[in-house]
Structure formats: structure tokens, C-alpha cells
Length: 197
Image 1 (cartoon, rainbow, N blue to C red):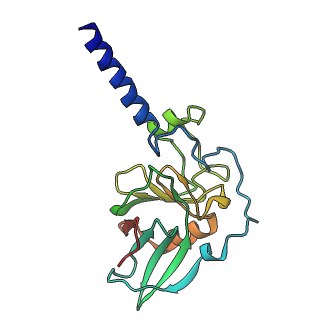
Image 2 (image 1 turned 180 degrees about the horizontal axis):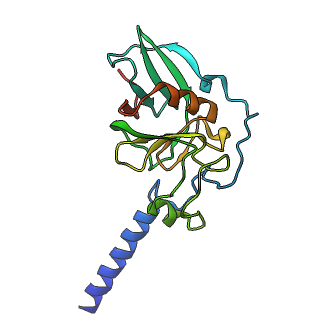
Image 3 (image 1 turned 30 degrees about the vertical axis):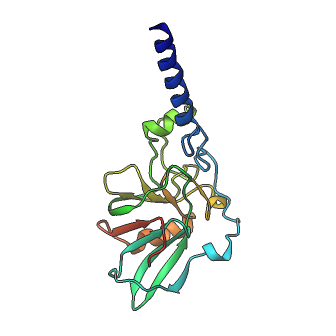
């Protein structure tokens, strides 16, 4: 019986180590969640991540937002085969997702209340931070459904085009402000990890 009990404990410990070492579950800081950092707006974005009008074929209605996680782009559909394309930062490995939601709320210079899961990963984060230039959510935020996810600005423009967040989609402050003015509450948002066929 003692050998059997020891075997159970050994197997449980091994399973625990495998889970804790699984990709995406490491206790790494969320790059860009740096309270008090003022955005360096002189950062030059790679040309592929600058806001631009592009050709984009889709059956979705004008005004729809399509987020292409793998491409690091957000498209605002304009109709007639065109869209506005914005460069974005996306969730890191283990924090990417896909689905269909709507914008349920919009905020200018939003306050930031990190969710409990983020606090567990980064205990040094503030429990609340008022909106402003040093806030990691940046100049604007658009809240997605009833989730903790948002389309928001950033005080780390150098992270655009990367996969480092906890699942939110970040744009430079000038771009998120532009998008904010173009879309109302209720806007349909489609998040795709793979390109549309």
C-alpha cells in the first residue's frame, strides 16, 4: 500500500510539473503593462503596421471589424472591397483566442483595473490606475462583449506587430483614437487566428 501511495504522489507531481511547464502558462510579465510609462510617440512603426487603406474582399458588412491575429492587423470594413488596416499587438502564446463579439462600451483615457488572473501573474501591478498618458490602456478603449478583452491604446508603441499581451488588442494611441471615432457601440468584431479563405 505504501508503494502504491508513493507511486500516486510521484505521478501527481510529474503531472503538475508538465502542466506548469506547458507553453503559455509560464509566469512571464505582460510586456506593455508598465504603469506610469509615457508613450514614446516618436517610435517609427514598420510600414506594414501603419494605418492605411487597402483592398479587402469579404462578405461582412461595412463597419465590421475583423482582427487577423496571425497577421497582426485589424481591418475596419469600408465596403466596395476596401478596408482601413491598422497594425496591432496581440496576445502571446497561450493567450490568443478567436470568436465573434460586439463592442459593448467605449472609453476615452480609460481607467485600468487589472483582472485577478493578471494580478496573480504580476503581483506588483496596481489594483487600479486612473486613465491618463501613463496608463497601459492608452488613449482609448473599446470593450468586447462581457469579456476582460479590449481593443485599446498602449504606452508601448514598440510592441505593435508583436504577440506579447494577455489577449487584448493594442494599437498606437493615434490609431486607436482614429478607430474610436469611426465605430459605435454595438460594432461587430470578428477575431480570427487564421486568414480568411
